[in-house]
Length: 239
Image (cartoon, rainbow, N blue to C red; front, top):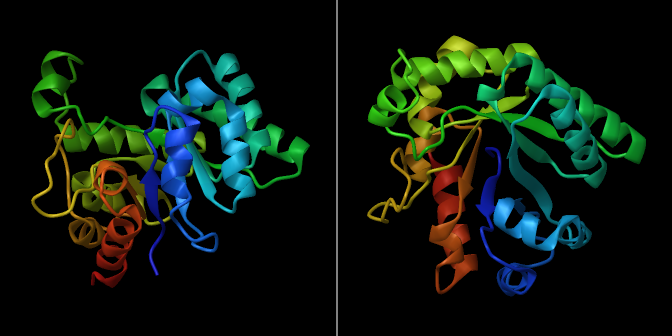
């Protein structure tokens, strides 16, 4: 059994959220991702409600600020009891270390396990051209992602968010003792939407992803439960 196939619930409000999650059996043991849109609209109570219903939660807020501000924010996240949360690796090693410290302090105070800290490398919407012309990065995409992952690991992160296309290089250069959580997952022939670096669940498994994040192919389906199980089977059955 591989790591989880995380369902990205990029939904505007609580009503829309529970319209989807209520379709899943209470014993599904599913991990769901809550991002900025829902969290900023509904606040931490929606996270607590999901946890109370037995879901594991990936709170994806991608913090990036001065180290002390991030530390204080992560103390609040650490108290919630979520399983994963994120920072931007581009925030630097001192900020990542502060984020980890904040999570550990908050979770210890609340008596819950500390969330896994995942550092976002380059967003899956960033193209090679944007990396060069907008970020003025002298590295190519793979080398940039590897560099950021090494920085994050050294600073105490538990893993990275990265395109599945970079995972094989990451595992070779950063190691197997690190989480490689990959968004940009699409079934074969599904539109890429605003993602530029995508893969199927089978391809992601072959590349060595630790866990997948899937949103629109599930939540926009006429049958989200069936769509989830179809992708989960492809993910778990891949060699």
